[in-house]
Image 1 (cartoon, rainbow, N blue to C red):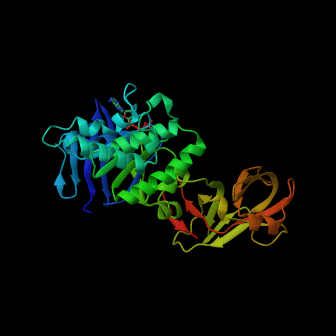
Image 2 (cartoon, rainbow, N blue to C red):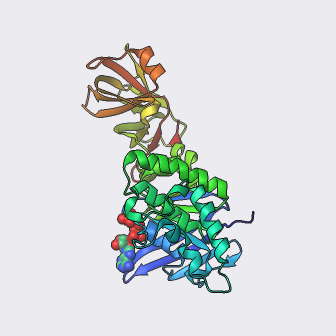
Length: 363
Ligand SMILES: Nc1ncnc2c1ncn2[C@@H]1O[C@H](COP(=O)(O)OP(=O)(O)OP(=O)(O)O)[C@@H](O)[C@H]1O
């Protein structure tokens, strides 16, 4: 099925003097699920609304496939929306809510009554809520409401699905379930989707492409796994996933030194410089006996079993820094750790940045 790619070039948006989007360049491939991720106020919603046609850019280009849609009205863009509080019409049944988008189409585009019934039934089946067709929105749970909101967004067969924090108001368990469910529907429909979220876990779990935004700019974009493993700067490293930051590291005479840990680095820079070292919690190796080349000794302070992951908090003994470590149950069993035990730790993989410049070095 022909679907839709999006291309944005040198896009700028001002609110008065405030430069809300600054030279945005972005490619969303056809059929992908792209997440716009960033802290509150960074411009995610503004960008989504410009893609939708609910807001206009001050300069720049916006293409859907090969078509310049910069000046196209929202109704002609073939987009479906789903928002955090997509208020369903209270006085209409679920069926009528889903049918609404079709019923308000101009007469020449509106399907027949029978076609509308068939389409709504198909959509209610898709969101697995056929049995709720006759009830009113206030009789639905939050999760059910968002599933109906999705059915409504899809009624007119949009080529592009735009989702603005669709699950933010739901509790953690329902949110998790709906994430998986939405990804499945996205693939099933072969649609192009853009999701706004400030939740990095949601973005990593759902998206093919993640666009990390900060203060009106794109910091980095790319495949979820590659961004997580190779963040391009400090902001992306800290925003995308949990990470331990070691600010007491330096490079001197071709060696990176952090606590008692040293590692040769292949850099032409021989003058001493301070760097910040970033290590993900799952990339810290724990040892129950002292060995050469460890960062430091630490005390196991907390052990939390979270599903299939064991999350530990350690207290580094030399400078009292708290360190987060994630282990698999198998690793945890092998180490047989107890609270208050002394361990030693070293990085299996690290990223470092010299502040403010990027050294761009991954071991
Ligand atoms: N209509 C408007 N008029 C003036 N300023 C606006 C308007 N809409 C948004 N802004 C400002 O533009 C910036 C970006 O807002 P936007 O809603 O796009 O951010 P966001 O990343 O989606 O944030 P959040 O996650 O909190 O929704 C914010 O500083 C906001 O205050």
